Length: 319
Image (cartoon, rainbow, N blue to C red; front, side, top):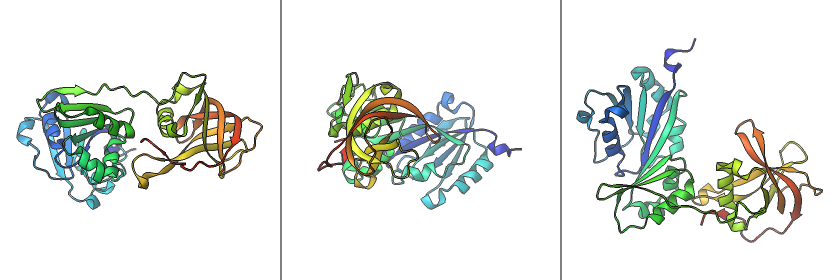
């Protein structure tokens, strides 16, 4: 029989962003609202100390437990499991240290702690500086965010700068602007794709690959049955099946450190052979396949392979 502490899943809310971005203020406001606290046993974990401190007096009669972990070395799965057993929380809020990569947080959560929402807070006045000097950390905070809140936004600021930065990392995150006068504005800027999804054949230019790959991985069903034509490098080594391969490009989403080959699965139905590590333009139709690790995934059923010279710039970016 499972131990009592593992019999239930505990919702976790992650508050991410750099020091002074408004994380603690948001937590104080949330925990003072009875609807959010909901009479539950709430565990709040702080991993940094800023100017604003937890305002426990405003929490009223709600049961709120405060724990502080000041070192990343101490933020371990074993320690969090001890907190879980000690407090038996019904809801958890973690204010994440902005200088930690979020993988350190994700990998440390107990198995029954389930992230239900990740909110990233950004001081709009400091965003440009952070985005230039700590771009990899900024991207890390935006990549999996469900909601991005830019606070201290003035009417003189152009929201497009903020919008583009978020959309480079995520197409699905909701973007909120908290204005200096206290009003809230929701980002409603549309993001047209740089190619025509409704074309008879969706033909990708080299510069469009990163946008297309991100879009098809987010909304694969939109491309089901669509005919595609694009260029990339064929990878077949280590893939079972003579007619199976992957075609793609190295993609840089943030900076040089995060360059990663991103490709789509293919099934070769053409008369051409599959040659590993060769550059080619493929044409085919998108179908849906199954992956043991990822579930339903897009598969390009290839009708034509045309081998070409490798272009001067094989790197795909969002810029």
